[in-house]
Amino acid sequence: MISPATRYSDSHLWFSHEGDEVRVGITERIAGALTLVEAVFLPQPSSRVTAGHEFVQIDSQKAVFEIPAPVDLDVVTVNEDLTADPLLVRLEPRGRGWLLTARLAPEHWAGLLDHAAYAQVVEREIGT
Image (cartoon, rainbow, N blue to C red; front, side, top):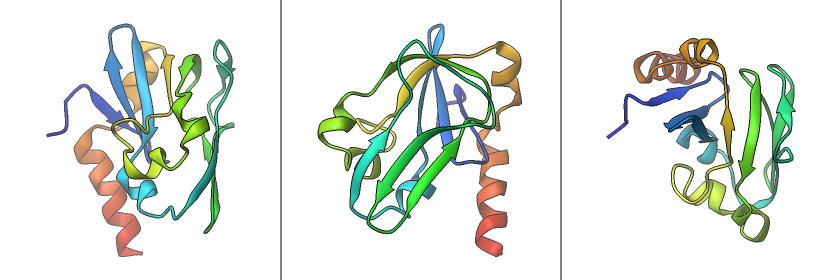
């Protein structure tokens, strides 16, 4: 079941509240497009990521996915497990394959998509 404390971006990221921080990962939509993941490049902890700028890069055999930040983020931690086992991002995108934790302003949280709005984004993409 999807928690109401989970929000989404149209760039196929999920955001889940964990206290004062959010955990960020890719959705199953992106994970399903990945093949053999060779590397995941994440921002540095304690860095600030500006909305619209690439902040995650996933290199797979099929393609390189460069994901822009949908909102401003202050990165707290990154998932170091992805360095040793980058395939986790594809196999367990909502589990051990999470990307990072960050802080974001409440108005940025409010600007992210709820589950129904995100489902509409996916539906439009599938229909095109």
